[in-house]
Amino acid sequence: MRQTLVAMLLSPVALLGQQSAAWTNIGPRPAATETIVADSQGSGTIYMTAFGGGILKSVDSGSTWSAVNNGLTDLTVDAITVDASSPQTVYAGALGGVIKSDDGGSTWRNLPSISGAVTSLAADPNRPGVVYVCVVQNLANGSLRKSVDGGATWTTIFPTTAAIYKIAIDPMNSDILYLPTIGHGAFKSTNGGQTWAPLPALTSAAVWAIAIDPRNSQVLYAGTNEDGVWKSTDAGMTWRPTGSSPQYPVYAIAVDPSPAHTIYAGTNGGGVWTSPDDGDTWKSAGPPNNVVRALAVDPAAGTVFAGTNWAGVLASADLGATWTVLDTGIDRANKPGYGMWIDPRNNQNILMGFEGVVGLMGTQDGGVTWSAAGQGFTGMGSRGVAFDPTDSRRVYAGAVVGSMLFKSSDSGRTWSRRFFGSPAVYVIAVAVDPVNPNIVYAGTQNEGIFKSTDYGDTWAAAGSGLSGAITYLTPDPTKSGKLFASTGQSFFLSEDGGQTWANVMTAPAWTVTIDPSMPSTVYATAKTQGVFRSSDGGHTWQAINNGITNLTMGRSAPVNIDPTNSLTLYVASEGGGGVFKSLDGGNHWFAVNSGLDDLRVSGLAMDPANPAVLYVCGPRGVYKTFSGGEE
View 1 (cartoon, one colour):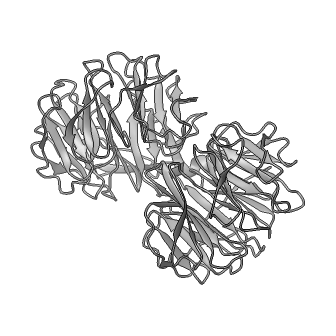
View 2 (cartoon, rainbow, N blue to C red):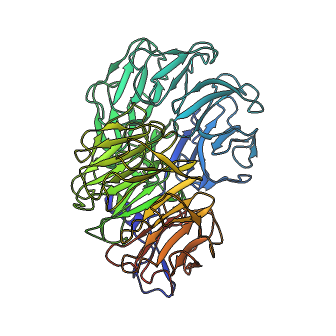
View 3 (cartoon, rainbow, N blue to C red):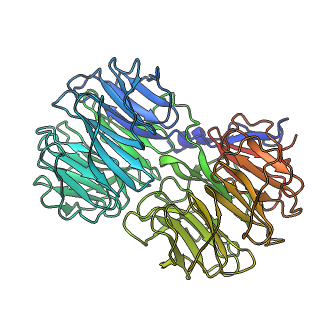
């Protein structure tokens, strides 16, 4: 099994550096699965969604698959549900709304637009045309919406400041709904969503999923972010933690309706866990080190399917004892990476944050092979990583999941979690003070900046005045306590370790880079306005976009400065411009894109030991150059 998974992630190019083009694709190309739905009537029909691969369908219990994307305008589909009373009616959701098929996925049409990302859909098993959709806006705000006319119109029935990813409908009485949230516990409605009440014992927990026992709807299972699986035998009135349940965030739960009645839990970092006795005892069923976001039991074949973060879809026909990687035909170049971070003391050690459920991947050989990041990293959507520049064995990584910041003391091979803020804090940016590396900063989605003075072991809120998402943090390499912070609307500067902040430029902020050889020179990238330069330490700015043909910049593609010649710069465009190079400090730029199959570049990193070696990432994986991007 492990050999199979490793082979799937091997670079498509065996001989790096021997290509004629400047850039060579070196992978990784994970197959990330978000949702799997099996026909509850036992027909053997299964649907799955894959990041960037649209929707796939099997009519033979997963033996063969075909893409059913006719009519889809966006192949980034994150949710799907089947109308149990009319199995040819299928709903799917993506970033911009809900689509519907009336012919089993052969064709699709758009339903009225929904603002936000659709994370989950559920069709009422007893009432045709009644559909629920979970929507997330800005990572930490969500709503539950309901349609009673097959998606023609939608009504918000539960707005919340927490993210919601699943809804559960009681199959015996579909007026009874359960709604887990990330940070605000879970809620129950007994009147089809008109009113809601919090579920006792789960009020402050981060709950990812609730599953209802199909044989007895009084029995519920809840997957939490920190406390494993909980169980209720009285429809949610009381709860207890189940015995020896997985000590990982539990993203998905499935109950086998067959006489075996196995309970499955999909975890963030621990693969699948199983319980043969209604949750009293649990054991790991593999595959290890995988994030499992989706589980489905096919009653026709008695098979359980697990959707993983980078190995695609796995199937088990023996209650989780063994697993097979299914060849679903997923295009293995799905979501782009957020960015790459290179170990300053070992340029072969590179970490890469992926969008969505893939989380964090790594290579120990400069990109020849890739795998999921080290043991213990259970986050997803990692956007910020920071190596300690004085001792790169210390690494910090944030993740877009409640209460998630990770620390490694062995260059990213093993990780442990650090907690601060609310149960739903999202850590987006991380930075280490180069002068005093015991000081570490973490930027969050809605709770400002946190600061540690003991190498990330304990944390406290730092200052005030910043709102929204803190997307990037840049400490001054020569002056402790001076750092820049990027938000969605502005660039800010602090001279006192984050206690107070000054708005130094209003623009949709992405990244900041300080020239270590001349700290008064600072570069910034704005989401849709290109590149800026400051010559007075960040107080005043001027646009320097001469030659940059697309001003939509890469979210994790800061200006990279050649340490041997600070006039040589690189930057990248996420909007389709590719990589740009300057030989005069940004006054003029020219494209260096030979070999790039896709010019949407979201991340850019320079080898600290050899500035001619650069890496970029985007929708087609990672590319590497040995020539500074030029042929």
